[in-house]
Image (cartoon, rainbow, N blue to C red; front, side, top):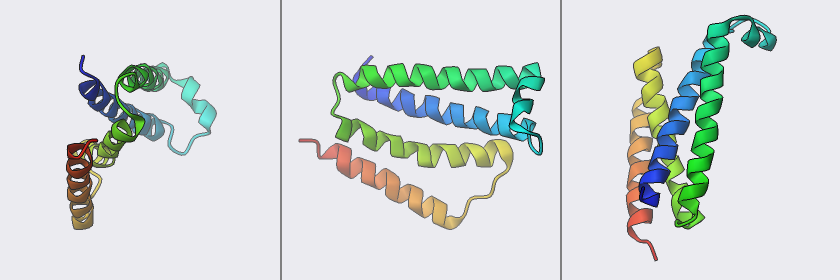
Length: 118
């Protein structure tokens, strides 16, 4: 898999993990942190999130074999767009006009920085 595609997949995996962490947090809301282990469904959701993060870390290392860290890390900023949009869709969280303006700036910044590779 091309390293740039691999790095984008990492961002998507991280976003999925964040959504699963939010689901875990909602399932134990108002309970002590130890309640994570009291329901098998919550354990599974949390375990999948951790597994996704583990796989994403391995994929990140593979991408960095061929990409400069300064170049690859810029892609991580996409998570600041993807995760809130997913939270809006999945959890009904509200996003402001400022969020969408900021997201446009992030995407524009990616185009500028990745488009001007040395």
